[in-house]
Amino acid sequence: MASFRFFPLFLIYISPFLTLSYAGDPFVYYDWKVSYITAAPLGVNQQVIAINGKFPGPVVNVTTNNNVVVNVLNRLDEDLLYTWDGIQHRRNSWQDGVLGTTCPIPKDYNWTYQFQVKDQIGSFFYFPSLNFQRAAGGYGGIIVNNRAVVPTPFATPYGDIIILIGDWYNRNHTDLRKTLDAGKSLGMPDGVLINGKGPYRYNTTLVPAGIEYETIDVQPGKTYRLRVHHVGISTSLNFRIQSHNLLLAESEGSYTTQQNYTSLDIHVGQSYSFLVTMDQNASTDYYIVASARFVNASLWQRVTGVGILHYTNSKGTARGPLPDSPDDFYDKTFSMNQARSIRWNVSASGARPNPQGSFRYGSINVTDVYVLENRPPVMINGKHRAILSGISYINPATPIRLADDYHLKGIYKLDFPKRPLTGQSQMKTSVINGTYKGFMEVILQNNDTTVQSYHMDGYAFFVVGMDYGEWTENSRGTYNKWDGIARSTIQVFPGAWTAILVSLDNVGVWNLRTENLDSWYLGQETYIRIVNPEANNKTELPKPDNAFYCGQLSYLMTAKPNKSFALSIAGERSKLLFMLQMFVLFAIFAFR
Image (cartoon, rainbow, N blue to C red):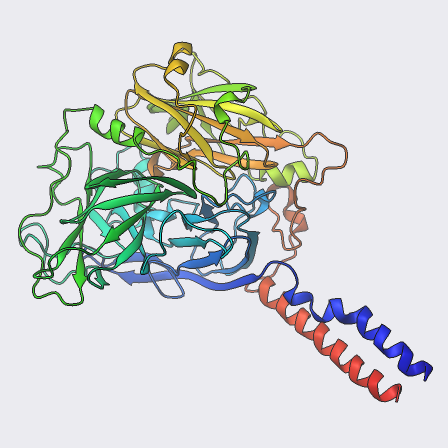
């Protein structure tokens, strides 16, 4: 009898181990093999980066608070890292996928990302962050759905559609790098892709025959959520759908005030959700268009992506000229006023950007002010470089976050200037020293001739102002201190400034960069290092067990090529469960 009294206690003791795989927030698993394929998006065969043989890559479709596990096997011929644009990685910059935090995945190795989409809802995307690789593909959309207990500020759409737009070159990304290294401009792109496909042949002169184009099938009368991501290189695009209104509803994790647009300018790295009702006559299909902005339209005609919106009861193909883009080549104010009209929906429930739940960002005391100035590329020590406040960033061989973990000295300097340098530009590893729980004001001043987009990893920031000219202290009088949109990527127009506010409550080392690939590749970035000064730091997750080592820590590298951390963990878990099950069976028979 004593044996039988002991056995229920034994089951209670081991039950947490038996349910280890299922405890807490759910896990979602993805297994990717990243490799080259040959494709011809614009009719010219070239090397494209695919995931599991597909270009673009799969959609990461998860629900807020899910734990996401992505096992990445690198079959390219160079190092690889993946970054998750707009995903905030709460307390976990180790998973950010940029060189400042993580050693790259070498050829034929694989590495497993694991992060939680904590308190986020919205539209994001992922892409390879190294070596200009995004210009060759390897990207895809991320959907973070709301949990059932968190309502959306609009009725549930009939369908959810991802649209990836971006300028594209027929040259391989390695050739594009060589062009930049030689101090030359990339020149005009060869076209614009929509979901990895070239334009519908709306013009027999501009578009050759035989190009595959994107077709989106819809039901008449239904409302769909279109998540549009600009995954391109450097060209701002105007997005529109022939004869249809775009009701803006969300951007990079923030619900917006719902406004109708006939078209919207989308800049490199930005994401938007539109609600589109299929309320037109089905006598024909309709054009979906993404065309180059702020250029001479007659010279840049080929830089236009065209897809097809197809009603299931459509009676004919799309016809007529493409819907017009804004006619404002000589009007600087139209696009900026459009950007200013995008406001935060302060009455919507759901996940909030930092500071969590606050609508009072305008009354929080600013603790640090940084003016980051962009100028045209310069020559530094015989090299063609892009600069930010007079500094062109150099990635160290040992990532900053890893160097901190091992107390290495001399890897970087916490000396990024609060105001632009006035002397000669420098190439160095200069980092912003962020104050934990501080509230930082960043002014992005663009003194170049093209639109630049800027992105901050790990955070959503409040966009409080933008205008033409030089920012001054008096410019604060124009700030929107009530419903400025919170997002992770913002444009800065040429000869203009944009001001953002950000609450530095996410410990780690976070990348602040231009999303324009040419400028990023040439060094227009830095990092913000945020450390919790408390003795017992419980605000950051520890270095992952599967961390790679490089630079000064290369001697610690023990991983082997083609070894899957995710699969090995799954295997060990299965072995553990099997052993426990055998032990239970043994105990049942032993205690009879």
